[in-house]
Image 1 (cartoon, helix red, strand yellow):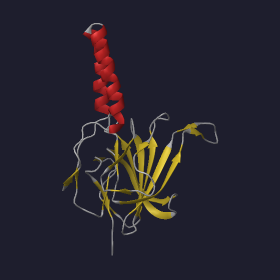
Image 2 (image 1 turned 90 degrees about the vertical axis):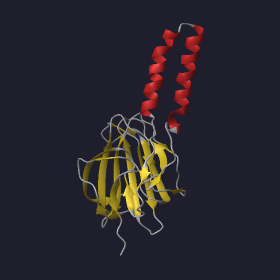
Image 3 (image 1 turned 60 degrees about the horizontal axis):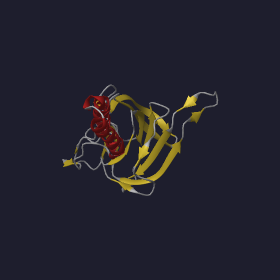
Image 4 (image 1 turned 30 degrees about the vertical axis):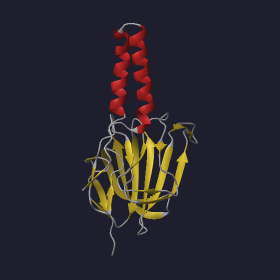
Length: 212
């Protein structure tokens, strides 16, 4: 087992935390300390939503790890529209209160990323932003992670770009207030989870790749 670097707060939330802390201190200094209490409450709420807990990575190079904390919605054969192949699609929805740190499901190189900003569909209905990330391992296994935020105004944060390498279970982004996640796997992958099961990012194995 390997432990990830210890962290308490995601770097995506540090700026907001510093803002609330500065406002709370100013209110306490310029008026009565009681006026800073609502801001202190916001400070603690923000710290909770942006928490980044250390995880113990399983020592299994062929394992596909959960990219986000959540619950498995479904697991079924599907056509991967990004890599144009038959695949297995695992759908997960995050917990309402996080954590919302995005982790790489396996080690490899980001071959390509797609980003569709929020807009409207053909019927005029508003759509959320969507990000997809295609990762290829050194053994040429392809995994695609598709992120659809639960709220249209959510900003997807991704710290890793196309052409860069990511480590198995390593932090690579942040999805405020959660998302629906689709993980497209090779169609011969051994699935290790069931619908309805809760999973944690970097800890739980979704599937194992098969090499002959």
